[in-house]
Image (cartoon, rainbow, N blue to C red; front, side):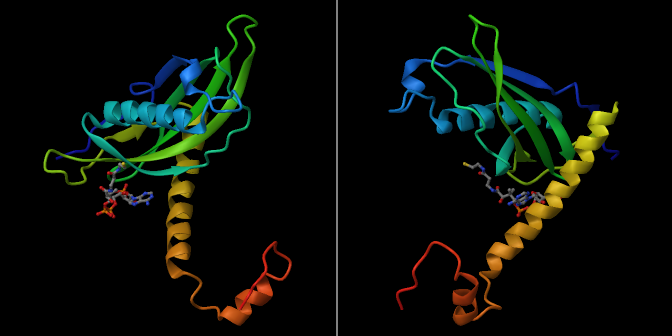
Length: 183
Ligand SMILES: CC(C)(COP(=O)(O)OP(=O)(O)OC[C@H]1O[C@@H](n2cnc3c(N)ncnc32)[C@H](O)[C@@H]1OP(=O)(O)O)[C@@H](O)C(=O)NCCC(=O)NCCS
């Protein structure tokens, strides 16, 4: 069976939501968790459109909140498939907040959600390839390939628990850090 290919624009999605008072924290700003939930939703929509079925979220990279979001702002999440592997897809999401009264738009954050396609038997499934139609799409695909490699290295590093170092070696490496070793 030949693997089908799809363009990036076929699954590109924009989700816009009004920030209401129940989304805010004690400081009056919108909870980061609300934005994460919206990002997960738009990542699912984008990935499931590209795959043509059910997908799961596997990993989230690069979530940094650059500017706070306020009640009354319209938050738009722009997402597209940046990279596809065998069963995984990296969805790039740009979040912007708009004050409708002033028309001022602020960039809230950009992040990358790795989604994996699952078939009806809940097994990972092969996703369509990606047709890259411009320079930006080629750059994003290449960036996605590196993100996949780097996140694999990060997982392996964390799994290793730095067991190749003795506790005394670690103590020395932490001398300039803000901690006190009490044993
Ligand atoms: C994600 C999952 C399918 C991976 O299963 P697995 O048996 O390890 O499958 P594989 O090792 O073949 O990985 C499948 C793909 O996921 C990618 N992947 C697996 N773990 C990953 C991670 N932590 N970060 C990024 N990508 C990951 C692999 O690189 C692979 O990509 P490719 O097919 O494009 O090469 C499985 O762990 C799962 O179902 N997790 C639960 C997901 C879920 O329920 N999410 C909702 C959270 S509430």
